[in-house]
Length: 226
Ligand code: CTP
Ligand code: MG
Image (tube, rainbow, N blue to C red; front, side):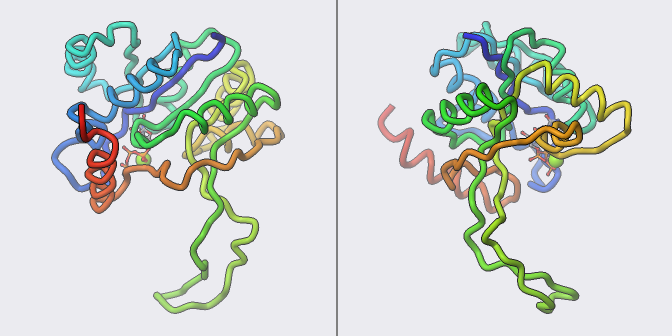
């Protein structure tokens, strides 16, 4: 295939308030990062790079080896996600690059295929989900305005790009000192259009302590028998 898969797992998970980084939380008996890497391997992808915190490289290597996942590359991340993605891009050589957060383990194959198809056709695509709650603007916890949710999406990952475009976008963002929390904003700075592919609402990112409930629920539903 012509897709380089980058799995981002080099953050510190500060909002989880745990002793371990969230990518080490287990799902069906394995750490989130290897659960996600294994899922991409099972979908048939042959170039998978895990971007891990540099302090975790040796331990992660041990986990991958124990699980027979030696084909998965390990690369050290950086202090922010943007730097981690740049480091990961150094290992990419194919036409298309797919960037996914290790903290989103509930991804389904249909969404992966759909966002790749869109990214391949247009150059830049992301999964996203239409906002479903009523949105307001508040000051000191008092509502001051209504926000029309009609046009609002929550972006997810995977985000899929033509690799040369994403590389150029990151080079330019670095040169300009632009800060981004996802890769679509880096690409938009070049004036490129990014398409949104509607993804499952359950493709959420483990971010806050209460999100551990979703890990337990997923495990109960998906990992019951084996
Ligand atoms: N990530 C990364 N390198 C960083 C920061 C983040 O590879 N320097 C990864 C995280 O491991 C995560 C994904 O990017 O899988 C999404 O980022 P986020 O949810 O913000 O994770 P953290 O930065 O680890 O969490 P927090 O912001 O709460 O500290
Ligand atoms: Mg973060």
